[in-house]
Structures are given as C-alpha cells and as structure tokens.
Length: 115
Image (cartoon, rainbow, N blue to C red; front, side, top):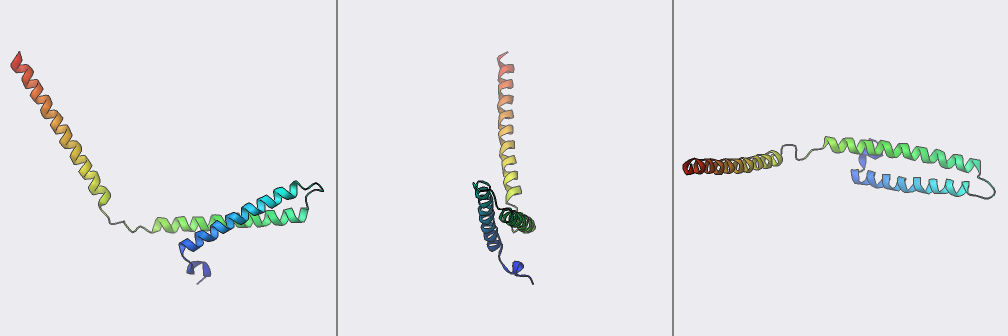
C-alpha cells in the first residue's frame, strides 16, 4: 500500500496547501530573479519552473482524487430528508391553493347572490 493511501483526506489536503505555498514561493523566486539587475540566472529559473510545473501537476492529481473520493462517499444516500421536506412544501402549497380556490368560490357565489 502506498503511503498516500495510508494518510487521511485531511492530511492530503494539508499537503496540497503546503504545495500551493511552495508554488507561490517558486513563482516569487522567478519574479525576483527576472528583476535582478544583472539578469536572471537561467539555471535557477529553469529549476524553479520545473519544480513549479511538477508541483502543479501533483496538486491537480491530488485534488482530482479527493474530489472523486468525496463524490463516491455519500453518507446520507438513504436519507429521505430532502424528498420529505419537498413533499411537505408541496402539501403546504396545495393547501394554500385550495384555500384560495375556496375564497374564489365564495366570492363568485356572493356575486351571483347579489345579482
């Protein structure tokens, strides 16, 4: 079993956070190097860019795996809360419509009796 599968999801996401910080440090380092008055050191820029790209790929893979595993994990899959609440809301709406129709019926009857 590889070490990544032995870590928790939270630990993997914390590692992603650390990688993002490192990516920002690398980008800042390249920007500093480009602003260097004596000109950028090509080897340093290349190394930073290579590490940057590798970290971005690692971040993408880890986040994709975490999103996929989060989609597969559905602890409330058999929960009937949403359909039950939807039914209750529909029931209340129907009660309201029926009350409005009853009032309309009384109004129509009242108009017929007045005429």
